[in-house]
Image (cartoon, rainbow, N blue to C red; front, side):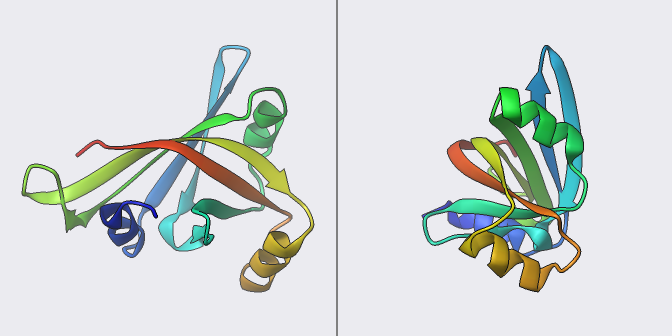
Length: 124
């Protein structure tokens, strides 16, 4: 099960930064907290309409970083504002049950970014 504070953060709208890197060149895209779906086995499913640089990178290096936070959740220091850095592996889905579930929620998507979290760290 994912950290409760991370789930609390995702319950508030905010930006998720997704970072990939290939050939020593990083790429960053953003999405919204409300677009992130969590599966029963704690994978993140994120609708992708663009994300072409991330998709290209992950075909050669499937490691990604995500950063997210909210000023509506108490942070590690006791004041308002909490954030996390997640590391994981990524792949893009174009079919299957997870894709079908996501396309009903986000009919504009062309692919689904699936992130399997390998580590998470509270950063604030």
